[in-house]
Length: 228
Image (cartoon, rainbow, N blue to C red):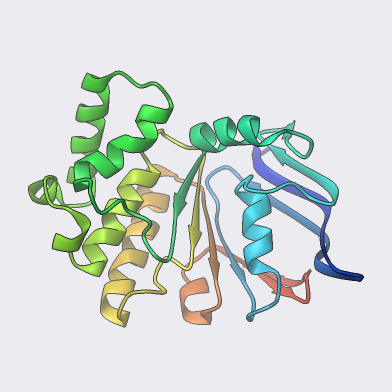
């Protein structure tokens, strides 16, 4: 029986805007098993970003429970959530979120600093990850010296820095041209296939979603369909 890495049980997220309550998520149930590649797709306003925040332990639900490796994280405070995120989840963002004053290597080392990894291990791991994404010759370059595709590959390497149980990719090709976006998707598929990396990808693009093994469709804060 496959191990569930993340599970959302009847998750609601409600925002209060004055006297108005906005239900961004309406009783979502979702389970992602170890080694799966899952895409969550939906139009703008469907609740994708809110769902991503729940899956990534960036926020807690108004109602319902979120389990990460069988641990209920729904009631944890922000400092505990941050520790769990740092150890168990790697993030890839649409806007790369690299620090411009740091080199590619230093950007990859940063998550390891927060987990108190010794400096020699940080150096070795960052260099190995740069080699993995074919950027070892660019390790001393800063983000503004790299192309969009290269920056996203640095972001992918950074997401792997602490050997996370799951990679969460938020519109990973959104800021890239179609050719570069395709190469980034191919790399994610390679990670999944060859290393068994668990990937959850949030996207509005049907073509991008089709690269996953399973597609969960969100509409009006509800999962309205799943396809494998």
